[in-house]
Every structure is written in C-alpha cells, then in structure tokens.
Image (cartoon, rainbow, N blue to C red; front, side, top):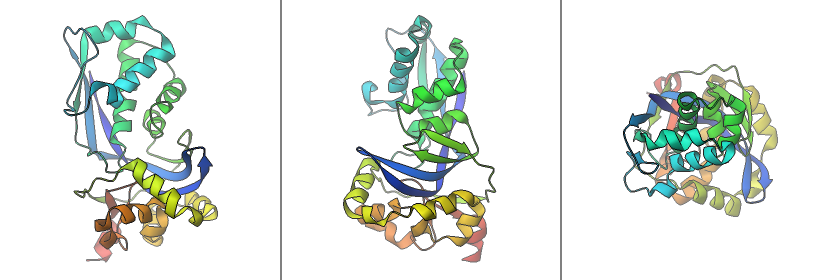
Length: 260
C-alpha cells in the first residue's frame, strides 16, 4: 500500500488581496511528477499512530499526523484508528522542505487519498479536498490530481486548466525559504504592488506562453520578497522562475537552450 506524492510548480503566482492574516492568490499550479515523495502503509502492531521517515519532526508537528487528526475529526469513523493500530506510515522524502514545491501538502493529500481507499471510508474527492483544506492551502490541488489548474483564494478555489506545459529544467538550490516569512515580508514591504489585471491575463495563458514571454520577476509576486530575505536568489531573477515562496527555480528547457 503505497503511492507517489508529486511536487508542484507555480508557473505564476500573483497576490490578489487579503483575508485576515491570509493572502489571496491567483496562481497556475502544475504537477511535477519527476520529483516525488512516497507514502506507504506498513503492516505491524502499534500502540499509537506512527510515522517514520521524517527524523527531527515531532509527530504532533508532522503534516501527516495533522491529516490523520483532521480525517478522524471529519468522519468519526472508528475504522481509521483501528487501521493505524495495525499499520504505520512510512515516508520516503525526496522533495526538500522550504523549496516552494509543496512536498508537505502533497504528502498530506496522498495520505488522505490512500487512507480513504484502503480503509474503505467512501469519501468523495470533494469531501477529501475539504478536509485537506483544513491542513494546508495547497492540499486540495494535490487531492484533485489535476495536471494543471488555476488556484484562487487561499487555495480553496481550483479551476482545472487545459495547459501546454513545456519540458521543465529544475534547479534545487541549497537555500531554505521560510514560507511564512516570505509572505509576511511581502505584506510589510511590497503590498503596494498588486497587479490583479496581470493575474487574470496570466490565468488565460498557457504555461509555455508564460515561460517564453513573461519576465520571471513579474510572474511571481513573492520573488522580490524571497530575494530580500535570501539575497543569493538575486542572480537568478532574469532567466529563472521561482516556484511558490522559493527557493526552487525553474525554466522551460526550450528557453534554456536559447540562453546557451
């Protein structure tokens, strides 16, 4: 019982407003299946919900544990606890943390989907997505499994998009970008730069069009904030796009060839 938990890339990410302490966005998410974690349910006998594969993260802070708690709270189904007395969760991590690739959200979504299937909970995709939204803004995108989608609001509005995605060149940088810090810094220093019209324009373009015609620094509002906090990103801003709040950068392989 195992499944892959793929990464995601933000082809563009525009902040369109605020909802209390949250930031409303409009962003093109694409699944990046070349990089993935793996989630497995391993049979055994356990006295409590057990997770292995993420050393250094206390169980209560692990997003998989939060997904388990949310699933319990939403369903109240005793089969969930019974199942995890006889199975542990093993995570094989390949997606780095603090990289803007949604690894934790993908892990949570894959856990929920696997649990629903193997425990026989009978939850619909929409029901799983509602549970996932309580855990993290990116979780519903992974639950729906779309190849590409425009994601709005605080992640709860997901519009599948028929996209044209070129081959992607990915660069994993040895830089940790704290998501909360990047967003907080953006609100503090750059919130006067909202471009809602550009966001709607980008939402109609394919990923191939965006990567070939839009300057990376204009495609992702968080780029300037990430550079402000992580100056080593500065040298990439002309050619490389930033995923999420960073630090992963990427470009179309077609565009990469043109810059050789």
